[in-house]
Structures are given as C-alpha cells and as structure tokens.
Image (cartoon, rainbow, N blue to C red; front, side, top):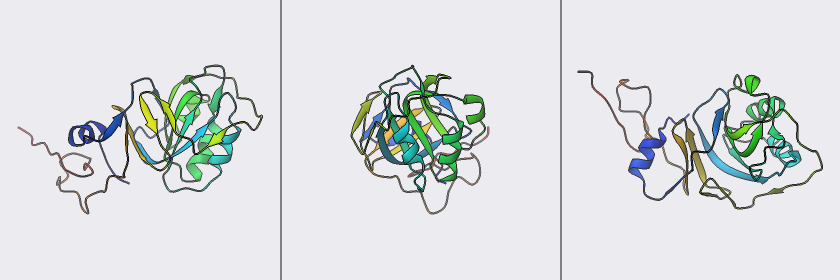
Length: 184
C-alpha cells in the first residue's frame, strides 16, 4: 500500500484538482487511493452493483448521484462485496446506508450523507462518463487520493519511493518525497 498525505501532495504538486469539503467519511479505511472508475447512478444503484462485481486492483468508484438524499446508493452488502473484489473506495455524490456496519469494513468511502431508504433497481445508469461535482472533473483512468484532509485528483499515479527514508520517525512515507520530524 502506498502511504500518502493529501496536504503534502498539494504542497508539492501544481497540476492537481482539490475537491470541495462536502463529504463525510465512512468505512474503516480513512485513507484510500486508486484509479478512477466512473458511474452515473441517480436514485438507482443497479450500475453500482454491476461495477462492484468486477475484480479490480485498488480502483476507486466515483458515483454521480446528483447529491440526491432520497435514497442510498451503497449499503453494507455492496461495500463488503467491493472490499472482497479489490476496490479501494468510493466517492459518492449521494448517500449510503448501513453506516455503522460499513464503518467496520476495510474500505474507504466519502459520501454526502446517510439515508436508510434503499435505491430503486430499474437498471438505469451509465459507465465511463466524465463527471463533475465538488469542484472536480473526474475522468475515467485518472487517480484519486483521499484522506481525512480531503480529496485530490491527479492525471497520473504518483510513484512510491523504493524504500521509505523516514527511519521510522513518522508512520508514513510520502509518495514522491519524505517529511520527517525530530523530537526536541
């Protein structure tokens, strides 16, 4: 797993997009990153469910729900299936449900809020479309990094150093550079 800090990535990179702070954090993993996969799912999570079924290697699903609070687009069953199939996380412009259970699943989720009502199942949605919300243009194949400080998007994946050089002083190594702190 690549260890990162969005604040430091922002300090060291000019060509990034920074999301508006409109999301709440869910899931056990408060930090997550991966290649963006997009889906439009407005009050119908059929396409989210289909995409969750794909086996991936740490991808992040970005879901455009038009900020609807009428129903949830993700619940505990889909969150667990996503974890089992290798998804790193979700950015959802909409709601989730089963948040207490989801908070124990090792996956990262940013969503607008919670809503206990499940979504419709009318098989309506779209994949691989450019999305725009939270002041970010989400493009399929770009890379997202999310932590408690925020969400950022880069065109290319940041490459980790071959070995961390922080000598164990702080429990993270920043992707393209290292920040260390000395006691005293």
